[in-house]
Image (cartoon, rainbow, N blue to C red; front, side, top):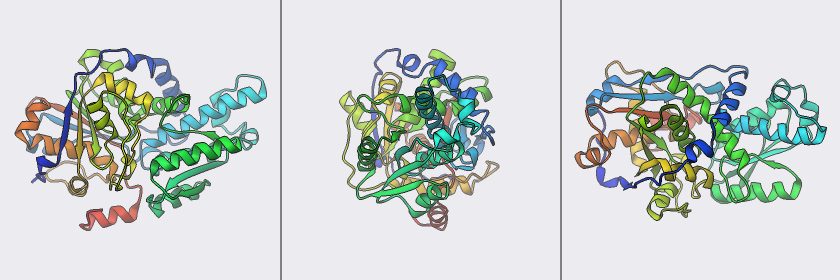
Length: 396
C-alpha cells in the first residue's frame, strides 16, 4: 500500500491569485513556438513518456495521476536539457549576430557552422547540477567554452557529469545563491556570458529563453491529453519550471486549465514565503535539502510574475517524504510502470500522496474522486550513487 505521510509536516498557503496577463506576456506564444521549432530539430529529440499511474490513483481515491517522466530527455536525465542548452544557443545567436553584423540563424549554431566564432564566446552559469549539465552539453554541441559554478554540497557525480561534457567546473564555498553571485561577478570581470535559469533586475532574457525551452515538455503533455487535468502539482526551486508549465497550460486551455499547486522543500521554501508575503521573497538556507535541484533561496522575479497571478496553493514538504516516493515509483504495486526518478523529481508526487491521504488538506485543495492530477517527473537518475543508496533504504 501507499506510504502514509504525516500531514502535520506539510505547510500550506492558499492565495487568491492576482488577475493579470503575465501568462501571455512574460512568456508569449511566439516564445514557446520558437523554442519548440528549434529544439525538436536537435539530434536525439524524442517526446518523453506521460505515464498513467492508475493503481496509485485508485489507492488515493483520485480519477487519474499522470506522470511526465523527464528522465530520458536527450540522455541528460532531466527537463533542464531543454532550457539551458536552448538559452545558450540564443545567447550565441544574439552575440554572433552583433559581431558578424548580420542576423545569424539558430540553425547555423545548431549545425556547428559557426563553431569557430562560438569558440571565442564563453558561456557561464551557476547550477545545482541539471541546468549546468544542459548548458555544458549545448556548449559542446555549439563549439563554445563553458564555465559552471556549483556550491560545496553539489555531489561529485553531478560535477563529473559536467566535466565529462567539457565544462570547467568551479566549486564555490557557499550555497546555490553564493554560486549564482560568483558566476555573475566573474563573468562581468572577464566578459563571459551568463546563461542563468533565474532572473534579477536588469537580467531577464536568458531566463526567459530557458523557460521557453521548457515549453517543449508542456507542448508534449497538452498534445497527449484530450482534456485538461483538474490539478497540476509543480516543483518550486527558483520557479522557472513551475512558471513555464503554468503559462503554457494557461495558453493551451485558458480558464479550463488546472488548479496550480506549487511544492517546495521546507528547507528551501522561497516561493511559499513569497506567497505569504505577497511579493518575491528570498529565504536563507540553513541546511541543504535532499531535493538538490530545489535548494534555492531566491525566487526568479520573472517566474514570480506568472506564479503570483496563476498559482492558488503553495505547499512545503519535508525531506523524509522523498525516499519512500522514489521507491514507490521504482517498485510499483499493481500494473503501474516502474519509473526511476531522482530526488527533485518526486516532490510534486509526494505532495499529492500526502494531500490525498489527509481529509483536511484533500478538501482544501479540492481533490476528490473526479480529480485528474498532472505531475512533472523533472529528473531521472542524475547521480547513480545517491539513487542506489536511496533504493537500498537510505534517506538520502
